[in-house]
Length: 594
Image 1 (cartoon, rainbow, N blue to C red):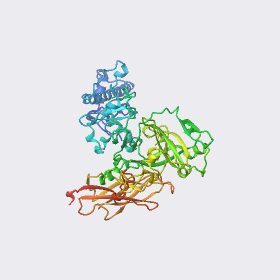
Image 2 (image 1 turned 90 degrees about the vertical axis):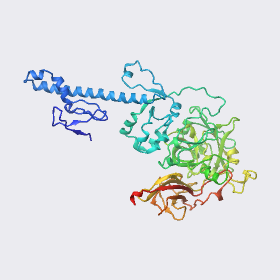
Image 3 (image 1 turned 180 degrees about the horizontal axis):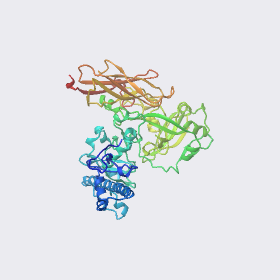
Image 4 (image 1 turned 120 degrees about the horizontal axis):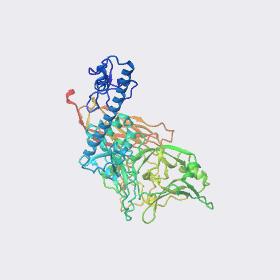
């Protein structure tokens, strides 16, 4: 695969010379090691080196021994190898210097190290994460990180094969994107990126005095690509088009739904308290106990906020709540101990008389000391089919801070509000959790109920969610180029309670005609379809239309189907929004084909 050609200047005209483009290629034959001019590549040539080596000795005596000539050629190859390495190193240093100079308007380079080893390598500045996050525009520079390294890719944005998608990473890490687009993890891509390196990421962030008056001052950093709906408490969703790029949502892009400040919990001293039956002591478990005393169970499950797609209800009539778009839903692999196993260890059994609910209390608290709380029915908690987890892993790693580290509840098929994070206490009770979020929130009402007439006690708390689907690509209001007279539409679909999505219908003309989309996703057991389906449709464009109203609707295994409009399901909290999803786009046609 290495390009080669014969050089008319070489001593050995019949021997192909290896072109050194990206790195020094070692060969078994030193004689073949030569470099040619190729752009900014290192250059030298065998005749020049050999003529210097032989000097007058080769001209004054024609009886030089064969062994001397072999020794000379071998030495020539070695010198060429050394020279090429030095030239290549110089090229790397030059590129690094150019990148440092191009970023000079954003930072001041540090003085060179006095250490001899460091002086032979490009010196790099050390940046904090906050410094990187300030560079998110072309004017300020587009900076990204990968591992511990910082890159200024401002000059590369226009060259990116994926277009301006790369701007989603501006001011943040490339890693969640590369996890989604695995083809980036190749040597030649890493080499291209390395030319734009300007520094290292500080492992110890610059210490800043905490604002003791701000309970959110110690919240963790988040990826800048997230669309923020609320800063304090932090609530954000990923760009919608990212949802269908991977079946498993990277943790950094999993939607964030916090009700209170994120607590910082020491995993060593952490203890989970499980209330025992009347007259019995509580079961107290450490994180290590949960990992060693109980079997590890893994579940792929989608979690959706009750307010997902609330913005569409807001468009009909204002509601109270965060203005979520379509991305307050994500899919992950969760692992931990089964809640059922832990309850059995605490002395509980299926069918216990009077045990109607399992309450969860989080360690996130408000200034008055009130914790977030919720509950689920006892039979759901104790059923092996429901696979309720006390999760300590997400996507193969320990839980991130925003997602409940060190322990959270995952209740597959149930609204996100019952999946309590930073779990501190479990209590089996005859009544539901009395927390605000169980009693006076996350309930649905008739469109006729307003804030003057609402009585939260008259409506049950949301548990299982209705069937749902949405279009992630194309985005509303975009210009879509036709591809051979067709258009491709993508989206997600999911239903609560373990009901599998069996079909997604897509219309390109507002619902007059329909196409069946192709579904993809993991195979799931009947009644335990906890994870979403991703869907794709490539269909002919409607004749003569330049404006399209794309519509999707999902059907689950119980033949529940989404309602066609928002108005009949509108409610004052904007929850349970699952009407047909509609996207308006304009088609640009290639007139040259006509």
